[in-house]
Image 1 (cartoon, rainbow, N blue to C red):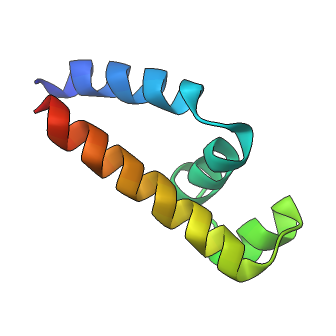
Image 2 (tube, rainbow, N blue to C red; image 1 turned 45 degrees about the vertical axis):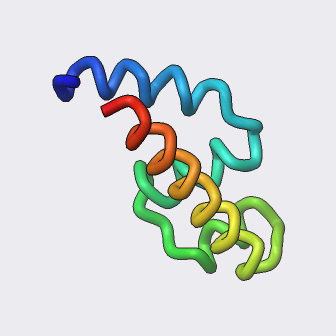
Length: 68
């Protein structure tokens, strides 16, 4: 799968995530926020911010691994 198609699929996948996972993903990978900043912004504990980012990454890895 070429990069353009992969980006299209990633955008569709991210749009389908629940809001708390989507916001955690965007804060970490698009806005390059630290976990402390994510937790402050979302008003959650830092371990939960880490867990959400981890879960989104695992989900995307599994999904993209299946599509290759």
